[in-house]
Image (cartoon, rainbow, N blue to C red; front, side):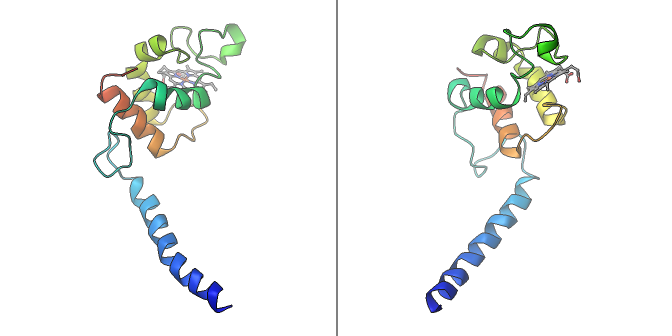
Length: 124
Ligand code: HEC
């Protein structure tokens, strides 16, 4: 019983701090700063591809045709480095504006990650 209480009182302040930080992260600079937890160097292969695979290529992929694209413009794709790079600026604008993905749900971290990738010159 005592052990449980001690553990709780040790964990609660940490939890409170974590929740507080979640709140302030929303106001974070979209391109990130030294304390944002983003990688120093953002690359397509390591960081951006997983994000695009999870959130964009259900509609924006060169291997998708017609109705399978769910209305996504044919020239805007994110399934390979070269096409993702070509649409990176537009992608970043839509992501920062919150219009893509259409259903929303991209975390602030992922938005900042994508913005930093573009800012650093869309490295592979
Ligand atoms: C469910 C399908 C779907 C997903 C997932 C999706 N898009 Fe789109 N996207 C669309 C459609 C449909 C359009 C064109 C209609 C429109 O502009 O709303 C579009 C348009 C765009 C455009 C053109 C400019 C604009 O905003 O109209 C860009 C850039 C874009 N998407 C980027 C992305 C990125 C980056 C992701 C992932 C973070 C993404 N999209 C996820 C369906 C999707």
